[in-house]
Length: 261
Image 1: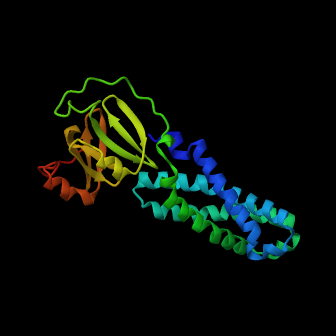
Image 2 (image 1 turned 60 degrees about the vertical axis):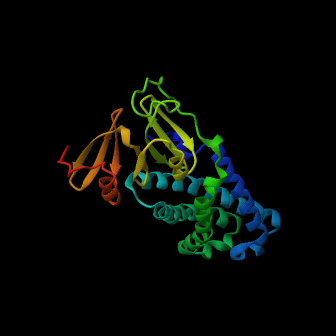
Image 3 (image 1 turned 90 degrees about the vertical axis):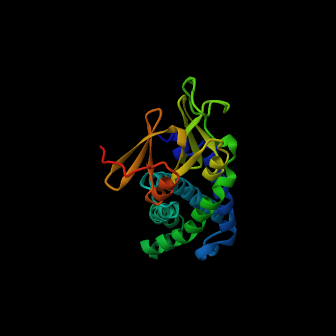
């Protein structure tokens, strides 16, 4: 299960979001887009635009994180889920921002909800794209929240020479990777591909979000056209259809699996 910290972000994550939002808001306050340059003195514009970007940081920070988590569970590309978050988040932001702006400048009542929506969307889309591109660089190893690990069990098998218990599988969770062993699981920070490259054990990436050690596989379950690998430690991992041929070539699937529940 994805930890709450990995799903919603740590306090440091949110501090970075609001720090960036403050900088963007200050810039917009000076530039005064959408005619706001003529709506009042610099101090008012700064307060307004920094408030707007803070609202956006709260709305989009939550919407994007939740959408990406949902996309991983549904195996939907991150860019698509982020686009959905941007479209829906802009609507929520526009509803709030319109009320604030009209309270400050009553003559803005002439703007339709569609105009408010387009204005919020035009600013929000570049920020969401920047979030997706820059977030892994902003997060360092210190961002990985600690995860309790059960007392480690003695681990027999061909990988016994590896320091610590052998890894059964890896699962991508947001900007972290969950490492499963017989002794429990923990989260590490870093791109999924980099963590896989650091594995000394023989294994394969069987799904966009899963890597499995070959020694951990105990069987295969078929449910229609969907396959799952059963693993030691009462774990299982989905197999993407694109990975089936590669697994057969590697000898992981020696015969057509029979149907299972």
